Amino acid sequence: MRKYLSENFKYIMTPILIILIGILIYDIASKDNGMSQEDKKRLEQLDKDIDSMIEHQKQLDIKIGEYNKEIEKVDSVISNIKVKKEVVNNYYQQKGEEIRNADVKQIDSLLRSRYKF
Image (cartoon, rainbow, N blue to C red; front, top):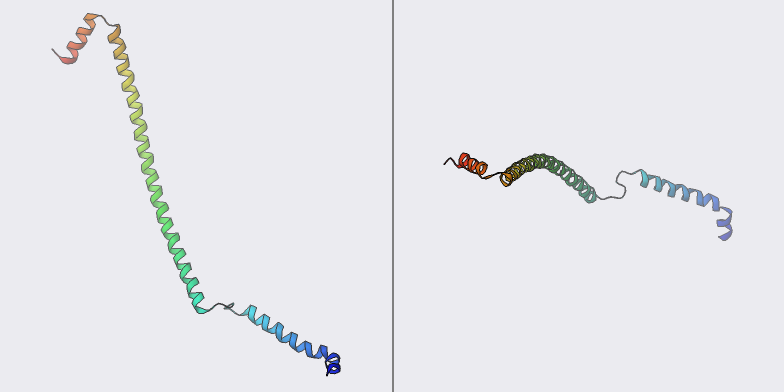
């Protein structure tokens, strides 16, 4: 038997190797790639969930853009108020300097014109 196997080794191994290579090629070429139907359904569901999350993220990005525009409007209003506040502060500071440097007659006429008495 040993002599038979050693003499016919290549004739025995050739069909075995061809069968193994055929099985490997079939396994690689098959569409399921070893995945069950349940796994495929889970993957499809995950793909759907990911797509819905992407759509939700797009909607959130749009809302964030709108909020950023509103924030810019509020910031511009605040900066305008700050400028107006500085103008008013400068005005009253000038008026305060005028009153400090004014004599009694100028203060009296300023109060009369302001309070109309």
